[in-house]
Amino acid sequence: MNQAPIQASVRPPDPIRVLLADDQTLVRAGFRSMLDDEDDIEVVGEASDGEQACALARQLRPDVVLMDIRMPVLDGLEATARITADPALEGVRVVILTTFDMDDYVYGALRAGASGFLVKDTEPMELLHGVRVVARGDALIAPAVTRRLIAEFAGRSKQPDPSPRLNALTEREREVMGLVGAGLSNDEIAQRLVLSPATAKTHVSRIMTKLDVRDRAQLVILAYESGMITPGWLA
Image 1 (cartoon, rainbow, N blue to C red):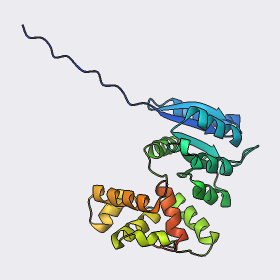
Image 2 (spheres, rainbow, N blue to C red):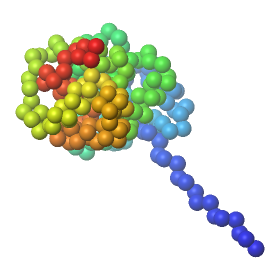
Image 3 (cartoon, rainbow, N blue to C red):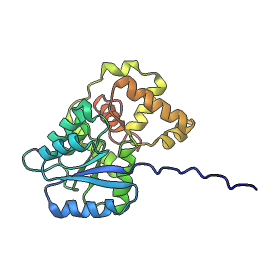
């Protein structure tokens, strides 16, 4: 008598663990409602100020922190810098929550180590996509508004300062870095340079290793600050 094959159980992947940091209770409640409705995302904590956000990040080790900029006790900029500078929190990614009336804090937060930003009135699908993108180690830099604002703040922050670190890059890697700085995805870079997406991804990974940058967002910042590209470069 033939027995039915035993079906091996497949363990579902762990949900993306999110920490919310915003001093407005209603804002946190709105984000929690959207995120907790998803099977692959779990809100593990809420902070009402930057100091609390840092403490909870150390305690809970979330995958993603959604961080407001303007908070009491410790603002989101300093909280982001503390979290991203802590070796024990290397796997924690910070996404800045902001509004369209942007200021220099946003660029400062990206320089401090944030992996991108979302506007508070973003569509639910964009919020969910952003959390998933950052959780898998990418930077939230693809949307046109992000490219435009990074370019604006980078352009006014200071004069280009070519970094000696760039000397370690090959000509192809410099070309790829310029396209990353312009906000192109790996697939878009592959198409432009007639490469496979896997090759483009390998180039980006090697560049980040050589330049010792945390993620793709930091690569964008360095591309602008070094003068490698300028706002409107691909226009």
